[in-house]
Image (cartoon, rainbow, N blue to C red; front, top):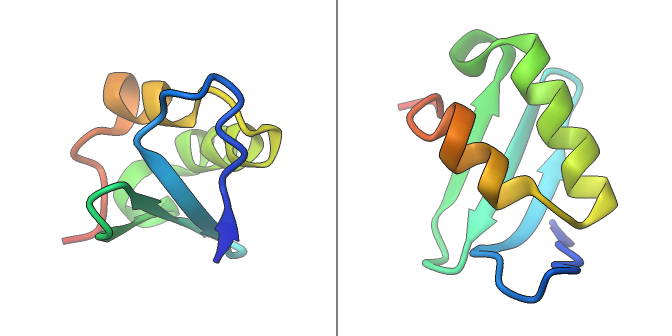
Length: 72
């Protein structure tokens, strides 16, 4: 997994891993959550990938738009 830059300094996101059709996000709890095209939709996953690479806004985006869209 790649360490999340956390440019704001207050994100609960710690690390992430990007796949072709998913993003795996590890929060401060240590638990990784997988958001896939199937569970969250391609548009949300692609936005999360962009935010993850940028190092800013990923946690806020997930809380607002994809909070429960992870694979169960």
